[in-house]
Length: 248
Image 1 (cartoon, rainbow, N blue to C red):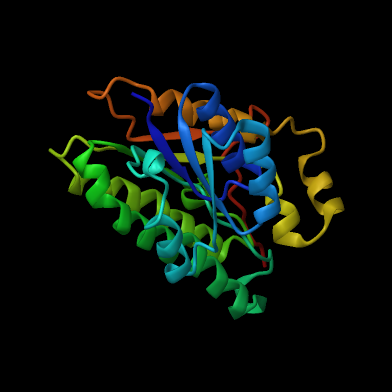
Image 2: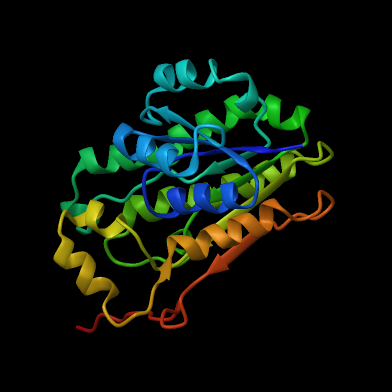
């Protein structure tokens, strides 16, 4: 029986790569995102029988519900939720940061993710499905300018582990994937500068969306009695050291 995944933030990066990896492995995917033209291109490339586009902003509950409550019958049973949609805005220290940027990150990375997950839980419990949430190493290792983004990803990491505890005995598998440096549109969105993105990843050999998608596919296809609680990935050229000392 063909399984179906709901992948948020599927218009680029990890989300798009995940849809492509799952479809190549025989899954159907509901691909969500705000940019209709990118979802349409994904459908044109992979086929309408395997990808259903759901155009909405994850922060808009009404638009989300309208899209997901009226899925074609063949996409209606969702076996896997991939909570991928998220963003970072700004790199200023907290005392200089924009409250608007902070609110956008909270609304997207926390509130929308929690709301969608809660909506999907009854169906996932009924089919003994799985939840994979894309957190971040920023939720564990703090860096200057991370402030609310790091806080939102710490929430995502730990909320996912809390789900694992609450869903004990239901057969639902829950995993927190916590990547380090992945070269996608992430830094371009955060800074608004292609040059800043190019400079950040230059010479680092960062991970790619396809790398993370491969991990998602591996977890999704494990036998149902196995659960990966959390997995942290970094490129070899990145590590978690670097405590700073300010001297008088």
